[in-house]
Length: 151
Image (cartoon, rainbow, N blue to C red):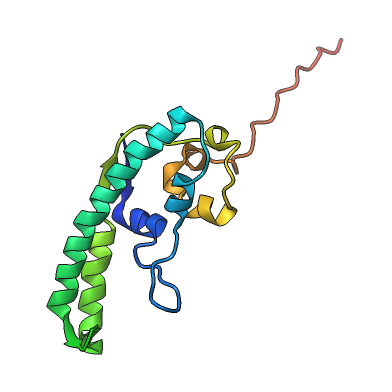
């Protein structure tokens, strides 16, 4: 099991992402899920995808309730008054910060060596990769030299 936030999941799944026509767009997690992977890795991602979907559905229900509390309806559009935006955003940010546990272990870059995935997708999915947990900026400790005694 590992932890991430609802905000990471909404970003990875494109929950808020829409094209110019208002249609959902394919998101990083979906592109990874559609990549050709070895069976054992595909199985792990399938289990993970089920948990991600369940968490997104729970968030979606809460998000709809939040919008319904703050928005007025104008035809098919929901509009939040500017005076209500700060309170709405505060509650939404609180919802996005909620931590959730996901099954299995994080992936590493070696497991996806043969998958075609963009740098932008990796950045959007960094919560899923153990490679981001280690600091690559740490300077290696200098080697100590042995000095010979001078007579």
